[in-house]
Image 1 (cartoon, rainbow, N blue to C red):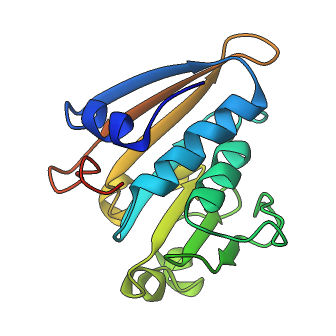
Image 2 (image 1 turned 45 degrees about the horizontal axis):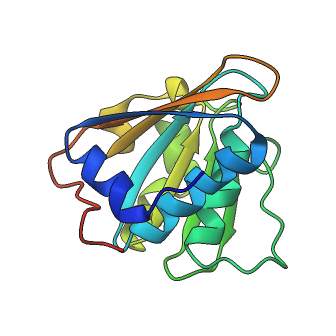
Length: 165
């Protein structure tokens, strides 16, 4: 896959972007390019079934944000939140076991928002976009054993990755 981060930003400027990947490596690469394009705080949600590539995308995003390879990027299913140091702090959350509202407060969600980093939320349907402050909603769908359809939708006009390369 030969896509420049600025290209993702240009397409997202239209409000919606749909990409198809043919391997886990390509899905991770889309995340990496997205990470390279981000230079300010953003909240993004990752929705999709088990095995759809959410954590794979998040791993690529982390690498694009400069998270060192020595930090394994894994699903926060049991830890609820994984934090990674990079160019911007990355908070990777899994809401599968949470009910939203009060429980978001208990895990320090508002504190994470104050840190001007990148927040990635898996299983966002356990809360709502307003409660999370979602800027970018991403849905990963399985089309075959390795093929994924990645749909990105900007929810706020302040999301502009065009000049953040």
